[in-house]
Length: 483
Image (cartoon, rainbow, N blue to C red; front, side, top):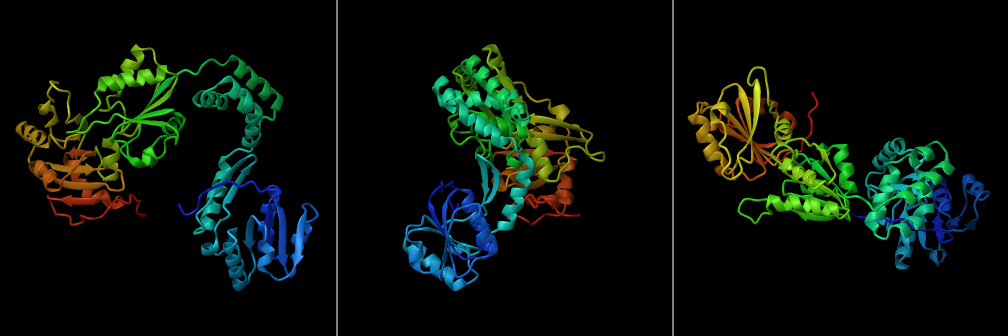
């Protein structure tokens, strides 16, 4: 982060613009709108600048720049078309420790102007740190179409009730939950319709009737790793949660999207490391919700596909705790797509089976006879450690040793890697390439299509069947190629 984004109160603060042309006009309008005490220094002034004086008080100084013009200024803007003058303004401001902006000269800026979406009092600022102002402007245009005009009046209404809500709810989390309920209520539609009085009456009623906030658990599937695969509902609930309970399969990029002030609790499980027993996780979720917390239990993939989500909601239901379930893209769907491998194909696979290589202790053995049938795809979750056993059992029950296999490590993530091989070489390839979890095994004829269809993924890959690939070292940029 090259610049710290801050909002500065400029009302009645001294600001100086050096320059009197068209660029100075644009900067002056923004500065004056913020209520600053503006001084403009230039040998002559554009007519648009002098016309601004009909609406705002401006101190015009008809002179060439001198360092003394900056005395007492809070901000300085150099907006001339003379590089030497701009450099002198920058040097003088730096010497006096005054924030300075030299227009269109990013190295000479201690502050920069962002592109602004103005829904007073809501203000959204977008910056490219001076590197791509046109791109920042395009983003602003997108946001202008997405953010309704009534957001400003709604924020003003909220400001009128802040003290009342603070007196009603002593804890910040309780106040936040109350406001969440307001923003999901008819108060918003009343403001949108211009019915300010009705909105105030309804908000007063909600405040007088509101009980202590009730806790809830959001069971959210985070998908296999790429944050762009999150559902909108998942993102919304992640932003609302007071506590986020997560596991190791949730990528760092996705964890960056949770609320900054949310409490983070890791209950992940890793082979060879101390793990939180599932029963403790179940009890933790119920306890947190009963204390009035909004709890986001975020899981890699989909919570109901080898994510133990079913066990967790069973306990929540038993203890009468409210919960919501948000499905996610399961690893088999995400990893296969990003590796260019269709899970079903009319020529290769008419069925698919999802299995886990990490069953419950003393659990029922997999139906290897069914899994070994031809013309189907077997997607194995958490199968790296048990790969020798998986390989041996499938071959024992009739699956051909030449069956293509794809191992997708860190699927959908920037460091995705795909290793293609045969069933006969599955375990040895995993050892040779030091495959680590998370990794998905895709067993079946469709795995051979990776070489034909992986043009869009540009994934790091290795093959030990058919024509060996030699692209080890490439990292996934997940860009779609134009065809």
